[in-house]
Length: 524
Image (cartoon, rainbow, N blue to C red; front, side):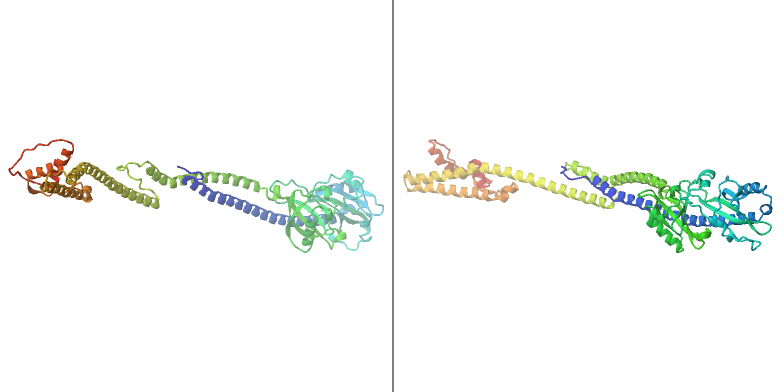
């Protein structure tokens, strides 16, 4: 009978195997997921750091190319000629031939501050401070790039050019204004050739791309380019993640090329950024540095492939869990089935002399040994049961013999006792006529007592009774005399009952060979 709280061996084995295998499997899947995440994150950090370096190099190369092209254009014969009719055609061709996106090319008269030619209308790009940067008289025939004046238009100061004539600013663009002097044939400063260019053109970053969006910060913490246009012109101290941005700024100025986790909104989307520092191209900040960052969203950029890995891991884990469950079921059944066979045999085996054999030939050696031990134990139990059954039958037979013997001897006990009692009472009560008759009754009582003693000895001989045998001692005797003794034993009871017993006097000897006591018991 199954008690409350008990369970089958198969169920316990199944639960233990699942308890061991499932946590290990889930732990392995979690460790694999974390390892994949760390590898993807490390790859993204390295790629973003390299992307920041490439973006910085691209800015430097683009500015250098613009400076070279601007200097070359400022020294063309067309601009040095007194004829201004070809100026407009020249600036338009120049805007088309420059390698970067040009928002505006403008030729400005230094003295009058009038626009001689422009590709963006009549909005003046040149500031007064630029004209004082160049000497009025040409000092050398070939100018170097240091004579190109570079500024970054401030987004906090709206310009008519930016509002109307220039294209709308795209996220991540870095706008620069480059100006070069134009001297006439007499070597006098006459014009300023200005280019308004947009660097770091915004490109659609596909999910999983590790090139990143550009973010440019100068050494004073002013944001020059940002994925979010409204952040351009703000100081990093105004940003929600100002501490990390300040750390990036300080590390980049110190010469480190590394990465950082950023958040442009309070508790918002987390970004991963690689950063690098380049020399500031602005003329007034030539001793400072720009910090170039390549920024990408952490989940949709750096860890874009993690979702697919997670999905594969979930499918694989579910498949492995199902396979583990099925394998555990098979193993539990394979291990529990031998014990169940032994249990069924033990529960169903109720016959003593059954010919059914205990199950053998299991694959598990210990269970085979257990089956052999149980088989030997059952054989011993059968042997003991047979011995007990034989002993029980012998005891039952002995008990039956004892009952039969006691039943047969009860009459034999009463007969001599009655004879003794009767003879003694006749003598005691004085019914005897003479002394000889008294002696005769006493002799009869003595014979009856001896006969009773023999019967008692037979009763006390338990070994003979248990063996189902009584010893018979054969000896020659006179049957006539034996009959007289039997009659004498019954004489008193006969007289007490008022009966008369007649016998024929036999004078001849009747020789027989018998046991006197046993023969008397038969006759009585």
